[in-house]
Length: 112
Length: 190
Picture 1: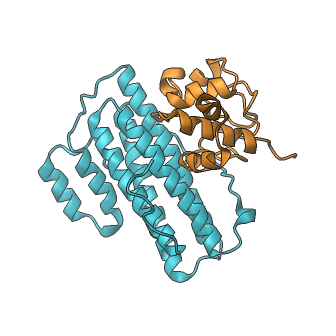
Picture 2: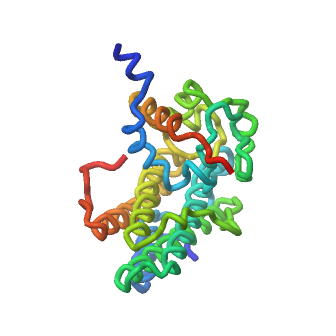
């Protein structure tokens, strides 16, 4: 039961966790880091219009889903050595699950 | 411009610290905290990794400068708040200058400001909107530096990044206070 709740994540709690990302990211537009809308199912290093990817991220061959995001968010530099997301990571699995739930809920790009 | 690594002695740093105007004090303070001259910086992967961390921080600082420029030019900020925004922008400029100088000192190429930044200007209708947007970015900066501090191979850089973190946290608190919110909502930041 607990594992299922952890896996599901709480998007409302995830929004608070996402506040940690706001120096570099937003949902809707590219900043120092790429935008997060359209993230799920996207090949890492491939967001259209974002030019600042590290070679490491482009080479990673990760496809963003719950599993790969969980791994990356736990330890970005271990998961993608050489990434420019130079952040120690989110240790708490609950916080990662909440953040992933938020990204999933809010992650649709507006129609252009 | 002094880099994090350029001050050869505490006495020199203190002279520098005391000799600067208030406008550039935080840059001098950062240099003071960084302390030692490691011109003989180790080459190799650990230095390259430190340069990546510094450049990511530099990119975010350059964007923060642009954000405050948007806020200052929006016409939405009243005089005392406008002065605050300009002051905070000045801090970010100092951070950026020191970060860029340190990247170069370590043999790296400092990232440049983007020719164009995208901000949600359409959602900024009044002073509170601008303050809330800036507060969110400052909170994010606190978290970003907190996530960077343990990553540096060079502990002097960790110390200096922690110094910037403290400045960003003060910005965040002051902006929250200006919004009528609890300026220090918790005992810890994350």
